[in-house]
Amino acid sequence: MGNMLLPVPHFHHAVAAALFLGLAGAGAGHARQDGAAAPDAMPVQDLPLPEDPPQAESDALPESPLSEPAAASEPTAEARLREREDLDLLFAELAQPGGETWARAETDILRIWSRSGSAAMDLLYKRGEAALDAGDTVTAIGHLTALTDHAPDFAAGWYLRSVAFYLDGDFGPAIADLGQVLRLEPRHFGALTQLGTILEELGDDRDALVAFRRSLKIHPHQQEAQDAVQRLERKLQGTDA
Image 1: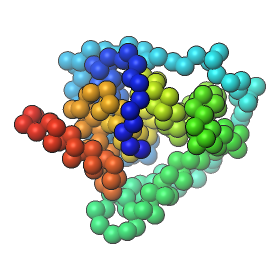
Image 2: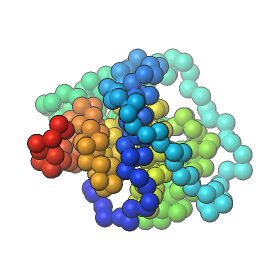
Image 3: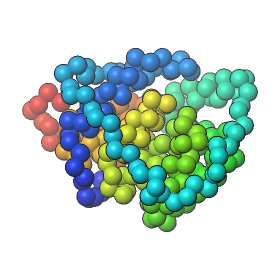
């Protein structure tokens, strides 16, 4: 997703940086269940503690299509283990600098991430995605809020809602949702790239560069992130970036 000129709400740059660096430190300090290493942490002791990010008012959202939480069909332990092993192999393939198999690996990773394990949750995701494609961010946020309420461990739901908030110009909630994504899946390169885009638009070039670099370390074939790193390195030339 390219940089977009959107109205920036009153959201202090230091808060955005602290949110990003704080979640990076939490991701590095928390061992993932699949044994994958989280991105390197950055010191946060000198940064101000962020306030609670603004939350969308549920009253302003369309009525949830679910009257009560739907029971997800839990995959078996064996299936979970197999999926984690598949992801590890796919990420290793994705990180290869040459060849063309990385594109297939990217497609497979996104496919695995898009599965919630529940038909009802998948339907909410598809409705949110369709509304977003139609440019209806309010309806998209409504469906995706219902999704994150009922499936809080489904990283793809948080990520898609962050995109909806971003397109609506609500950078604070977008960053908060990206924090949820990266807590659930520290290797989510899309979330890191999106975070870099938002931080750059907020004027926090240094932390934006960190986010883009971390994204490229996971998925080095992202042209948008490559361009952003070159642009920010030129801008910050002569500093300790």
